[in-house]
Structure formats: C-alpha cells, structure tokens
View 1 (cartoon, rainbow, N blue to C red):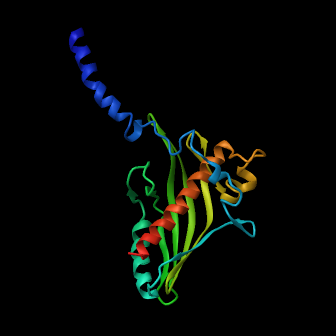
View 2: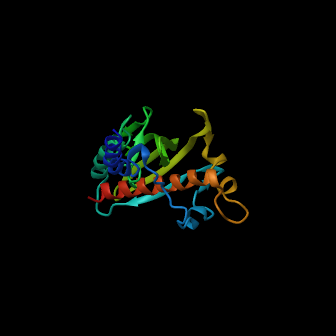
View 3: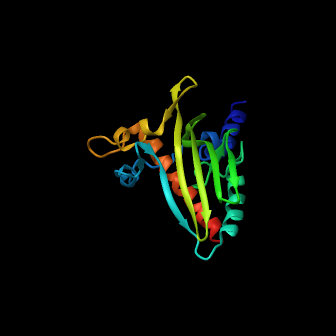
Length: 216
C-alpha cells in the first residue's frame, strides 16, 4: 500500500510543477521585483489636465483616409470592448478580460468620433488559489481624420480591494497621480504604484494596437 501511495506522489509531481507555472497556481507576477520602474515613477508619466488624469496622443496613419480609418477603428473597438470577453494569458502584454459593462458607447461616421467604455480586470499577479487584481473603468475617446487618430483616455477609476471581498471605487486622481503615488525619494508607493504601472502599460498597449490596426 505504501509503495502504491509513493508511486502516486511521484506521478503527480510533474503535474504539480506544471500547475505552478500555469493558471491559478502560477506564482508569476506582472513586474519583477528587480525591474527598472524609473519610467513609471517619472513625474508626468501619468499626465494631468486641469487636475484630471488624461492620456492624450495623436496616432499617425500617413496616407490613410478618414473613411478607411473609421472602418478599421470601428472593427478594432467592437472587438476590444466586447462585454465579458477575454484575450490571451494574463502575462501577455495584450491580455484583457472585460467586464459586462465594456462597450462601444457611440460611433459616428460623419464626425469620425468613437467613445468606448472600458471596464476590465487589471491583474497584478496570481499566486496559489489567489488572484491579485483590480477592476478599472475609463472612457476612451477616439476621433479619426485623414492620416491620424486622436486618442484621449479619461474618467479613470479603480475598484480597490479592501479585503474580504469588499471593493471601494477610487478615482485615479486620488490614487495614481504624481502627488498620491510618488514618495519624497521619487519612488513609487507600494500599493498605488502597481496600479500606476498597470495603467501606463494599458495605455501604451491600446495605442500600440490602434497604431498597428490603422497602419495595416
């Protein structure tokens, strides 16, 4: 009997090792403890306009017409902001897991304007049987014109875990701004810092996806 039990344990070891590197048993984190975080801690890395956090950019698409860009952005947005959808593994740069509130709120071909409601999980790390994450909510306003797409991510907030399954909605201005997130040494504060990192990564990934979409 003891030999049988020992054999079962030996057989289970490879599966246990694999489980610790995948899925809910994974011990991976989004950013290594030794990673260079200076870019995220730089003042202005999370920009503010009149006291509100707003990420703006002009995404260039030389030679593309407004009509062409509208069709491309419409297709991308309908996929990216589809409610309850998931793409990839949480360690992938382009991973997303949308909540039921994610949607394209409006799209107007004449003006070239889109407004997308972002509602998604931002995952910090996954440990054995525990997921460390937040829920992020934002508006993404896009305006297409000949040769470019104007990008404006605003109205950002997070559901911050208070423990025991309780979350509190916190505006980004009170959580990831320079004032609230960077200490006197110029370093990121531990808890809001991980929100700031994930937000900047999200914005950069969205801009990258749009640029690749419109320049195809």
